[in-house]
Amino acid sequence: MLRNWVEDGERVEGLRVSSVAVRPAGPQEVRALKKRIAELERANERSSRPVQRFSLGGVRPPTGVIVAYIDAFRGRFDLEPICAVLTEHGITIAPSTYHARTVAPVSPAALQEAYLVYALSHPVGRGLGRVRGPQTPSCCPSRWPGCRP
Image (tube, rainbow, N blue to C red; front, side, top):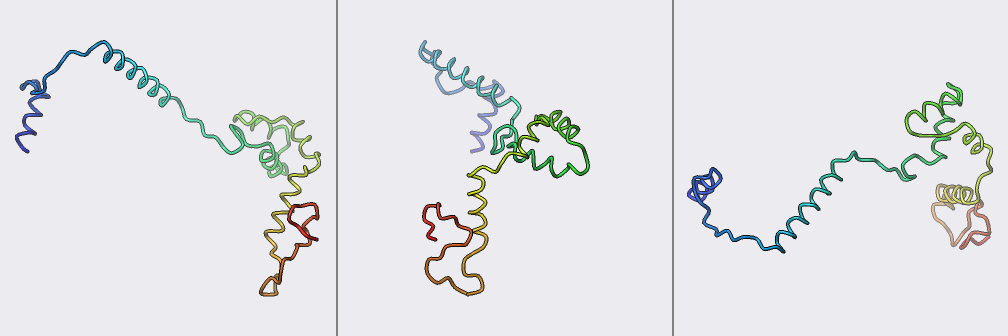
């Protein structure tokens, strides 16, 4: 084992000739090696680019999240300065978009989700200790599939 280590060190330093016979590469091997080098260079180029972090809504947060953020700071700052600072930091939103989003009616999908969240967070039969049979929460609209009034 020590002898192998010494021989490897001598081969690296050029003091010993490798015992493996080196044969010349054929044209197919040269092409394959050039192709592999090109692939590795492309992979290296991709890995050296800056990494972008993606959230669930894409590159920027969903408009609803931005509107909620603006609502949180609306008492301290006016709308235009908040939109300007967000735009400087890469989250573009116009004051007109904010106004359109705040006066827009709630979509049916959002309303259905709110009903579902309420139904799941307020279990049926509270205080009874158990649930007796299939019951429908009072908030469950009859148009939902599987809900029985």
